[in-house]
Length: 451
Image (cartoon, rainbow, N blue to C red; front, side, top):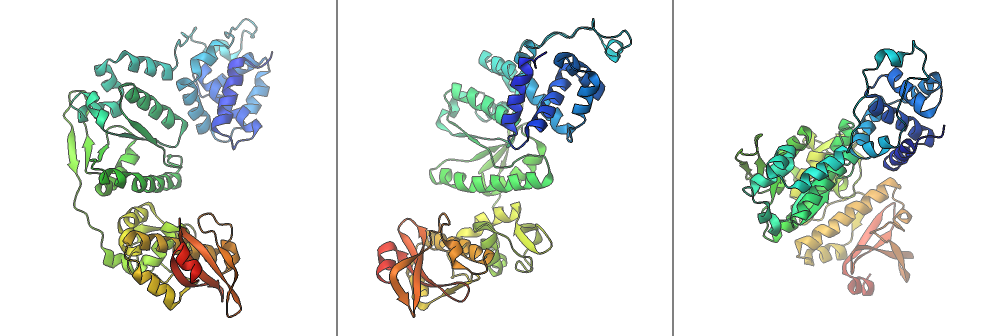
């Protein structure tokens, strides 16, 4: 019997969501997850029985194939995705299992509980249908996120058309599905919506979750300050979502939100608001460690474990016994202190030396943003040099740095080079002694005429 169309469709879906898996791995996971749904059981015997019938193979052969799966939890997660997305459509294409060809003593006859009613609609389609009915009471009961939004606007979601709704989703297939459903509903009511999916934000492991939180903090720092500058009030709607994320968002909200919204269960519950507290970063405690912080956060790269010194331990992680990298809390604190630390005095980045002309150019630069942009680039340049033992050739071809030598311009027999800070802004330099000596900094024409 050829493989049923429903299983083939599901195998393609699994391959799309997990492109790093080999074809044999995709096949085994597809069979396991589909079998879990169809057998309504995670037991190897029950799953093997139903798949053996559908595939017209021996139960023992299917059982041996299923045993190759190393992560049963992943098969169960995929089974959930089947139910939510393609489930009923794929099941409709499968033949109805019957017992006529089985021996009288077969385990399937002993464990059968009678025919199960088929599902006529996937969970995903059912949610879409419920949302389209626009029964507000039912919608608020069904979705904690939408319930919080209705509470924020006193039950009149149309009042939100003047605001931007930002939906934060985990970096998972199910997270995207849920975010898309909510975004589709809000757009249907005329609300501007944007979805944010921080890279790697999953609960697969503690390390993955913490890395995802770091990505979330970076995204918040890129996006939310601009809304503040435009006069928006930023509200973190913490109704819904998973609990591990809420704990972090409580702290993140103290830096990026004007207030946070909570709501107890029930469509008639009154919203509870938590204001932003007047938290101030202790710059004096961070200033001695501005260089390793900038290297870890701006490059970003690791630094020797000795460099953070007595810096508060929660601000960095140790990825091995010798190196440190910025932690999610370090990223959060750095984002608040970055402007002050990078726009102050020139930082003594490793493998970089500053000539008097460069120092004077920096002193004449009064715009804090321009100073911060320069020192951020210096951190990146220093990181590349550190990774390549001071060899400036490693800077060539690096996106954003664009290091190159001037034509026919030398100093003491050594070619003068330059690298990019931003559009139209350059730094001239000489590769010497396992690093760079920086000569001038400024607008493109100024540096080119006076390298």
